[in-house]
Length: 151
Image (cartoon, rainbow, N blue to C red):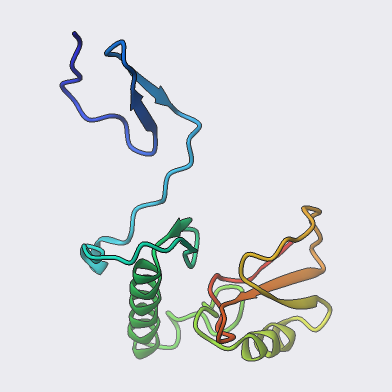
């Protein structure tokens, strides 16, 4: 019987098989760590599965709301600093939490040559890459859930 004395490498998934060995999958997609200044995520969460904002993958609605709250706090903190250190325009400025229409207008004010599409989160889209297109994914109340980017 074999036991692993150390924790598995970060960002790798592992399974313990019945023959008592550990299989590590280095290609597994794991959620990136949250910024340390956010503290610990909520321990009690709902049992739903939703797309999380940013590049945090999927998780509960409770976790999604916590991430949005922390991102909003970060935006508020950043906006209170000097304007020379805060990005004033997209793509450097976070549009998460704005309405889809506000985000679209902000993007078009920055670059009027792009085609901006507002889509519900989880929409099926083509996988082609186009620098002339920006997709904005919004939740059920029309708020941006992930930072729009070209492609």
